[in-house]
Every structure is written in C-alpha cells, then in structure tokens.
Amino acid sequence: MFDFNSILLPSAFKFKFDRVAGTKDKWLIKISSLITSPSADNGAMQWINYGEYTESTDGMLLSEDITKSDCTVLPTEHEVKREFIRFRELCPVYTVGQELHSSLFINSDKEEEQLHLKEKRSEVFDKLLTGISILLYGELNGIDYAKRCIKWLRSTDFYYAPASTKYHDSEPGGLLKHTLKVVNKMLELLHLPSYSNVDMPKAILTALVHDWCKINYYEQYFRNVKDDITGVWSKESAYKCSGSSIPFGHGITSMYITQKFFRITMEQALAIRWHMGEYDVSESQKHELMDANENYPMVLLLQFADRLSIVNSK
Image 1 (cartoon, rainbow, N blue to C red):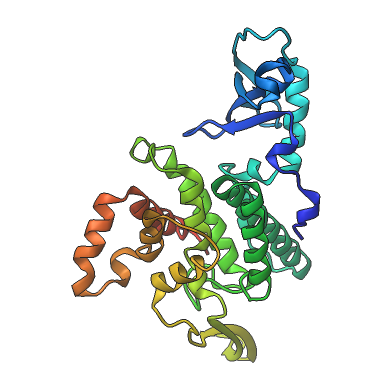
Image 2 (image 1 turned 180 degrees about the vertical axis):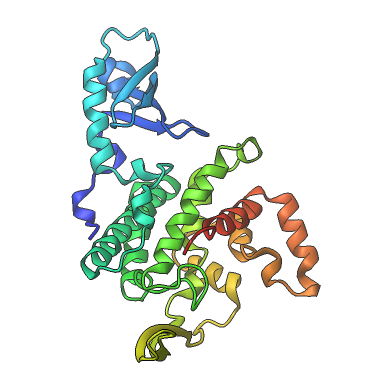
C-alpha cells in the first residue's frame, strides 16, 4: 500500500526535474543558484537550466543538451543522474506523465494474482494522485489534499468496485483498472498537436476522478447460472446497481465529489461533467454540450480517452 512516509517531495532534491511538455521521456534539468554561487542575492533560490535529457528504457538519463552557464562550478552529469534515480524512485511527481505499464491491465483468474494486481493498481493510483496534487497545489497543500482524498477513497469501495454491471471492466477492481486505462489513453492523446496547449496534470486529474459517481454504487450478489453443455446449475458472482447517495446524475456527481477535495478550473469541471458526451445528455442540454466541446479542448480529450479505454477491455 502507498505510504506517505516513504516519499520525498521535490524540494528534497538538489536539482529540479521537469518533464518536457508533449514528450514521454524528455526531462529539463535545472540547478539552483545556491549550488553554483552561494553568495548571489544573499542565498536566494534561483533555478538555472542545466540541460535537457532523454530517459532511456532502463530509467537512465541520456544527455541531449548541456546548457553552458556563467557559474564557476557546475554539478557533474554523474551527480545529476544519481539524483534523478532517487527522484524516480521516491518522488510521486515522477509518475505524472509516465505511461503506465500494460501489466496493470491484465485479467487473472488466480486469487493471489488478483490481489497483487489490486495492490499494485492502488499504489499506482495513490502515487499518481499525490504527484498531481503536489504539482497543482504546491507541496504543503498538495500533500494535505492527497492525504484527505485517499483516506476517504480507502473508506469506500473504489479500489475493488466494478466499472459496470455487464459491460466494460465489470469484474471486481474494474473501476480502478478502467480509471488507469483512461489515464494511459489520455497520455497518448496529449501528444497530438490538437492538445498541445492542454495542461497535462490538470487533464490527468480529470481522468482519475471522472467516474467517482460509481463509488459505492454497485452491489454484489450471486445468480444461478446453467451450464449449456452439462446442464448443471451453479452460483456466479455478479453486480447490480444499488442506487446513488448523491443523485445528481453521472457527470455532475463525479464533479461534485471532486470539488470536495480539489480546487478545479472551469475546463476541468466541464470535462468531468460532460465526459459521457452524447450518451448522457438530454435534448435541452445538447447546445451546452456542443459549446463545451468546441471551446474547451479538455472536454473532448476526456471523452475520447474514456471511449478508447474500453476497446478490447474484455
């Protein structure tokens, strides 16, 4: 399980690591003026570009461009790369923009493997939510928001609920699996020129919360099923809708819950509200949906990512 005591915040590192927008593996490394010239501005913190690096498949940094600085002393590449390894392993901010491994989305009939998958998905989700909170709201507020939200999520069925009763990801843990798949599809779409101006952390947050309306919404039961070949009847686990305690409707309920934990923008709110697109809109609301689609790129981005995530989901 994700443990807040085992992480490091960005301020704990000697260097600043910023993922380059629109890329999967490029990082801009910045160094502090306190490292290179301690007497400057009475020790005021100033970040200077050190260089751009590409992260290889084994997690190492490969130099792309080293910035020449007027500072007398520059850290060595070995120091930067060693610190990046710590950042990758201990700082949740690293996960924001990182493609999630396909092993998170497999299905297994073995109970032990199912438990392992559940724990791994839960850890990835919590770490990603924490990293986004830090980036969007700062270290102190971000950690506070994330702790409060995750504490609530752990008191619900979010981590083991299905995403539907009989359609996509209808198995135990399907809601969490579907959520992470939407994140991956969103990352793919964010590399398209059409979404180059969309703020990645803000967009990913909408993916993480878009289906919170399904929390505590499904009820497990056992139904009798007859084998077509043997004619033998057996009991099979299934889910049915138990009703919502927050009956605003699909998108609005998710938006309402999200605003209890995070400060979100108009665009984020609209993306969550309209993420079902034309599948959850009345005749009188079609103009509002069209306006949101045309004026806020994140709205269609979340709709597309959501739909792409259910392709071959069985």
